[in-house]
Length: 595
Image (cartoon, rainbow, N blue to C red; front, side, top):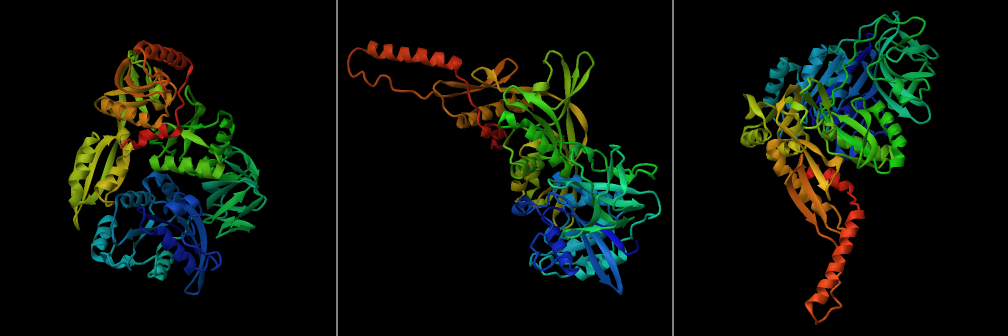
């Protein structure tokens, strides 16, 4: 075990951690020249297209150092705030962390929150300044920021560049000399933490784990503590560039197990694997259940695909443990699922993965957050969906979730950032001026306000320089109303939203205008109305497609024209009673892009 080092890479989005991971893999010859490609650990098409890491990936490297052979287990992590749950799982299975900071941008909000997470788990942190080859690098200022953040010595900070490969040998040396080897007893009962899993259509579910204590051999009978199910270890092995089978794995090793598990429900990330005949006393206290921030409904476009969608969601949840879902039904869309996401990017990625990996066409409803509704009888219900709101006469008051948002930006943009937060009902709690012309502001604001377009607006106000991180801080009373959209007097439940009373009129009007553009014209007039309870607050009309019935009347009395128009009017009226309005998919998504 003295020769094993488990470490992860933590950084803010776009600070170059995937590129640096490529250089480490090349330096340790873990991948052949033929198999090599940029962003090697990002194996999803989606990750490559967007240039972001969505999944944490584990890979094993072998390195010869000062006459000894070492095994290095690297777990690469995402940098975006929406995937922070992936980061927490990687940190739980490591003893050390590479902290990568972009020398041109300095320490950002997500870096700070990930560092605190690593410190809570007592990881040894190795600071690395990346992108040192760029002309815009500011090594002295960034060094000061790192020292202020983790309190290390100037000499400990490694200057590196993922592009040129500068500093890679120093990083490998620091990992071997500074990161402590894993502690565990190979002779104790088996205790292994599951940190990820993936569905393989031919072999069942592949489970990735890190062994804390004990030894596992091929063919052992093992059980998963949380579900109590037992399996034979048909194949175990380590995660090199491709999976490599092994006869046995000992304490400190990171590996995979394949045992022909077919149902996704039987594998839970954070569960503990142990032997059936010699079980461990207790499960590893892994990581807590994730709390979704944003809820949205996902429905199949074709109602017959409901069961296929359920299977797809189960398989996706294996690989993305932060996705939660439960069945629900809607009058407009039929049967579907109410899903919980960590943020809007997470929601977009899930939708995209359902389309690409499982070929599912889905409709997503307006995202919202969960509210606590206090009724006059004294009951408290949690509402994830506006249509689940009790009648307004029964409601005493509603509480909505609040967050503490930390924003780090350049001082030039602070006015715009503050105005944005105050417009979103934020309250300024703290303002700290940092070195090199940067400022950190802390706001307490409702979570519902950041769900739609907050992050995009923040980036455009600060020209891409602001970084944003948030934690939930509890619930507060709110003056909320349910805004319904009516088409020809019928409510479309998928377009209902819970919204603050002050914003309702503006939002309702913009919704009606947007829907007028998107709903195709019919043979009859379509009235689009926004309503709060029985009160209509905005209206737009999609005009009917009309045939010119008076074309054949040239000259003559006006009554001849009127007779034809009256006849047409009757037909339109009858048609309106039987006609129904098809709402296109873009209309459900339009709410997100109202600006």
